[in-house]
Length: 372
Image (cartoon, rainbow, N blue to C red; front, side):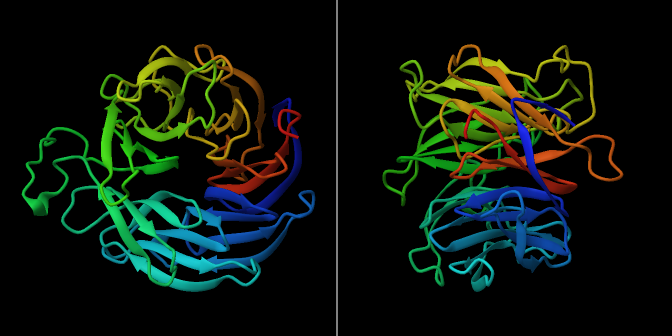
């Protein structure tokens, strides 16, 4: 274990996870592989969390992503060998977290839903849909959670094969919406090897393209997350863009994160990058899941917590967006039987505590004087 400016409060021994989310004094963990599906923990005492409920995943499916707000919990259903057509999201009443109650199963067709955003009413999801190639953007209204209603959808022209659109990427990676994040009346959408897109959703029924930018194929790692900073920094509007360290195009050095200036949002401009100090930048191939993966989608100030795969938690300060710098880290012990960590997701709670989930096993609860 290695730590700077951080302290381990508690380690939860549980199956590995794809996403972790804190809502009040409740922690939700979406697990990577069945039969583990979703675990719910009481974290009122972060030094002694307790498991209060667990939902089992179906064989051939994982529900490794979870969000909770407004007494609702959404988990994804994505095929990892299960029959196509039965994927989507499941919606639960978690007004009593220890007794989650299934409200409905909403199905998209195809392989289902990967990652998503949820604000307590609208869900911004990345489903596969009949008639489209790859995942697209979709907005659901959950004002009546028993009857989710599609409000709008968006896709890259060429994905809608049932609509007769010409598919121009025969020799390129299939389009895939990874997930949208909402800030105000904009969606910031990661689209894997097709880059990033900013969408105007002031009319949710007709999402409108504002701009896009793609760092592939110059860089072989896919665009994983587009995180808008909620406040201006040095008078600039910023978008933190994390690539995932899975070099699908060719082997190379580990993935890193970008800073884009979106003050003029029709013309996003990359102004800096950040890599964990000491990691190779010269293109020498290294194994996947060494570098960047996912920033916390909940923020406080200019410091962004990152899950940096084998490098654990990295705390990156964007106070100077032209030169982001690391101000702390926590590298947990590898899971049993592993030779290095595999930090997959990270979030904050209202107390400023950090929750870091390993995709193989366990959740670390971490404090830092930067937030608490």
